[in-house]
Length: 274
Image 1 (cartoon, rainbow, N blue to C red):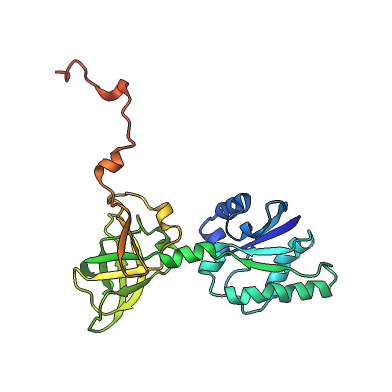
Image 2: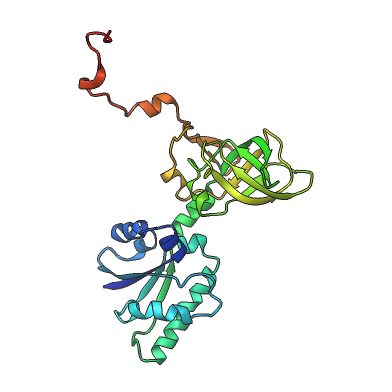
């Protein structure tokens, strides 16, 4: 039987309200790194802990208190949640910190097992790197505080991770002019449609294509046809070819699942009242 602990990002769980439901689902269904365990081996989740928060300049001491509760239950593996793998700038440091924390806990007599394995969830990280969003500049303006603003034809309705992640924005061709901090907005009619709050780029002309990414994880599973239909998805093959793997949405596709009950289909069966 394997006793497992999960380490999550405190920014994701506390500030963004993530309930770790994806991690629990992967554990229950033995997906991702949990698939490495034999089917015959029983898995027990000892607990889920948050990281101590950023920054982690004080070394492993902050982790000791978090890990102690798990080690006292005999946990033998600590899995890094995807939020740590994708968002944490200290993840490489964290890989070593549990080992240092383990040595400290053993010295204090807190645990007696031989060691703790640290496993990082990489499956969704591979998916993230495989996905990119191609957007087009549809407008330029100056904000009241004199910042340059660029409006794109893609917003947070198809890129929801822009709310908590600073996606890189890459021009498709060489740009000229003075680079300055630029805010990138989507086309939606709300002020929270911010694709990137600040990126240092030269002026961009209307019609300029941009590559935003990587964006392969979580976006396609959370996007929505709010104001605009969802775009097509294509796959670039190893030979450089382009193959469609999802068609762009149309009104017919959106309405295909709609049903009108017969009781309200004809609100005025005898004609409109006079």
